[in-house]
Length: 444
Image (cartoon, rainbow, N blue to C red; front, side, top):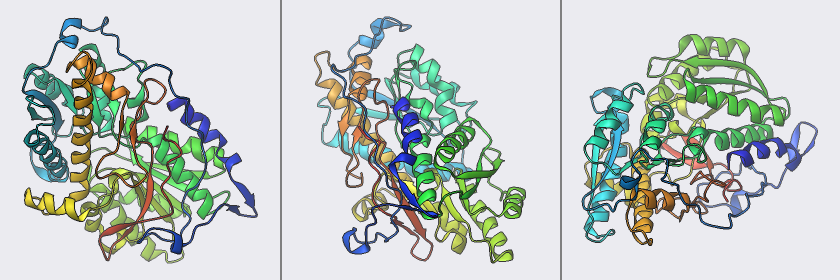
């Protein structure tokens, strides 16, 4: 699918005709949209999906460090491992709801015997959120008997263990990371992404900017100074170039830093771009917006549109920015704070972070769907049958937005979710509202 997306970026311009400064497009009205949806047309374009594979993909275990272990039947309990910050502090508290959501679904799956007599056990290793510690944490999980690694957060963290897990033929499922490199199924067949990729997200954002601001829109980028952030910037730059959007400035923040990026905001304010696109994570999403709010107050004529990467689409984080977060745009493939789900999470002890909990619940739900499919295969439940099931997936999570499906197709479509909804944050209601319709054209 990665190759298809690269081609798709190049043809987006031909999918939109322009008159003057604003592109012509099919405009919908609020009367025809779901409740809570704005009449902003949002991004819109048509892309043909990749061809369907003739035969289901199957992994080759001959190159595994231990081929027999990859093909051995997994007995109860099946240990699912993940690494996450567990040492306290803000980064741990922000990620904690993901684990609550994940464990809640595992508990439900066990209570309903979704794998029959096989019970699922979640084990969490502490990597403090630091990529250099993730390999040690994951190696410890394998030593403890993990048969699957799932819902590992962070692009850099996942890439840090990708080669190790593939050498050991260990399924690396539903990675909570947007790097498109996690879809390299040809070279890393045991690794599977679990969220919308930066390639899809940046293409959608660039197209939305082209539609809302017009040709020659000026954009400043703010990204983390690591492989994930720089990849995001490169992806946006490719899409922007093909659409005639002008990236006039790129700033970086060091990963893990939560202090307000004051110097970067000052530099952006001096350039006065029409749009800011920021790929950040955690509390810095809020501190950036707070600092940007100060700059906008000092420069009342500067009113840039602000797009945040999907990792910032969390009302529990954005509310820290107060009114400065109002009106920012982001994206998601899941519903936002589903009431029934929120009630379930409150019963599990959560008081906040429900958007993050949805990520954990959905990653667990998709992982269990893969395990069920593998168990029903002719080989039964093995690590090889698990990755085969992951590569031939057709599944609709319970919290997916209408029209979103999790679909993979061997090497031709390695990304399970490629549909995205642009959303706008309402600070007064501390909630997100849809902008336009779901963009589902990337999904095969």
